[in-house]
Every structure is written in structure tokens, then in C-alpha cells.
Image (tube, rainbow, N blue to C red; front, side):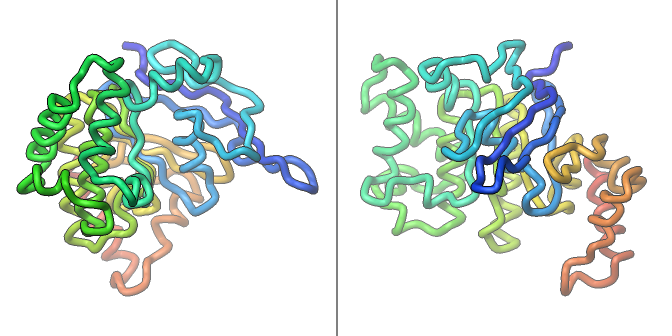
Length: 282
């Protein structure tokens, strides 16, 4: 079966005063329908830029120099902006790192989410129907008293609750692909697990593919089917999570696994935890 997402030889450059800077340099990867693929690597390796390239949401100083990004066979890089507005949210949705930044601070949460549904429905959906659908979706992902939450402003909600609301927003139009860019980095460990459990359960129940961007190798091993390790805008190694974390082939991957976070015990204990997670997910 053809992959849902196929990126081939993607090159992205940043225009700088002393010349163009390579951000993505011949990146290639694929993602199957209903599959969860993790992008891992150091800061600056190009993980987030990959997600933004798929969405065609690059910053003004960035430009795509070469390559293709195919969604179900159609090259998104050749689509005009009008076509991309129909694709974003409806076929491909993105969960950004800072959930509160994705919500309008001066509008109630319910108004923002209803706007998403109505915009992609072509104006046929009434606001009352949209609100009912959003409230039901919030309930499905474990948010209690959804009607009350819809009346709140982002500043009145916790970071974890805002992140769950953004997950609901991403699933609102039943996309084929979710891009989650460090969706739990600002959350405590307990809330992090809750959010990841909700996100992955929602993807699997709906058959939605997920591109999970993270620096957290343990999360990638626990929740993802395959992992792509990125360095300097390229994929240096990819494979099933169970194999890649227990028998890495690339020296860079081994270096990441051996880079023990402070306060996590010995490197051997940390690797054993990853092995345990990978064994459960394989």
C-alpha cells in the first residue's frame, strides 16, 4: 500500500545575511496510514521545520529549495494557498508546542473551536451544531463538564487542559494526519502521560496517522511504531522503535541514547527503561 505521507529529498533554506543556511538537507521519510512515526534528534536538527514544511507554514525567511511532500500522492508543495487552506485542519492538523499560544487569548475557547469547524464545513454548519459537536469531542477525550470549558478563556485553564483542548481542535475535522510538535514539553510528568495516552488513543481509534516530533526518546519508544533519528536536516537512521532503541546502527543514535538526562540514574538504567517501553510497543 502506498504511504499516506511521502517526503523525498526535501531541502529548506533560511536566507541569512552571510548566505543561505541549510535547515533541511535532502530529507526523505514516509508515513503509513494509521501509523505513528517519531522524529527525534537534538534541537536544531530540523524536526519542527519538517512539520512546518508539510503544513506549508514556514517562517518568512525560509524557502523550499527542492524536493516533494506528497499527501496521498498529491504534492503539497505544488498546491496553491487556497488549496492548502482546505487541507490544513481538514486533512492534516497540527498540535503546536505551546497550546495557549494556539488559542486566542481574548476569545472564549468554544468560539475558537467552533470557527474551525464552520470554516472547514463551508458555512453549512450552524454555530449551535458546531458547539454541540465540539462539546461531544471534548467529552470523548476525557474533559469533564465540556460546556463549562467552552465558556472559559485560555487564561482560565491549566496548561494540560489547554493541550487537551488543542488535541480536540486537531481532531475536530477528522483529519488523516496529525502532526504533534513537542505537545507535552511544557507539562509535568503526570499530565504528560495523560495527554500522550489521550492523543495516541484518539489516533488509533480513528485510524489517524501521527507524526510525533520530540526530543524525548522514552516517549518515542513508548508510543510510536517507528522512529526517524534526525541530524543536521537529514534522517541518519530509521526503523521500528523496538529495534532502533535496543540495537541502534548509527553512531549518532547511540550517542543520543547514551546522553543521560540529569537525575535519571545510570545510563544502563535509562537504556533498560527504553528497552522495556520498546518491548511493550513492538
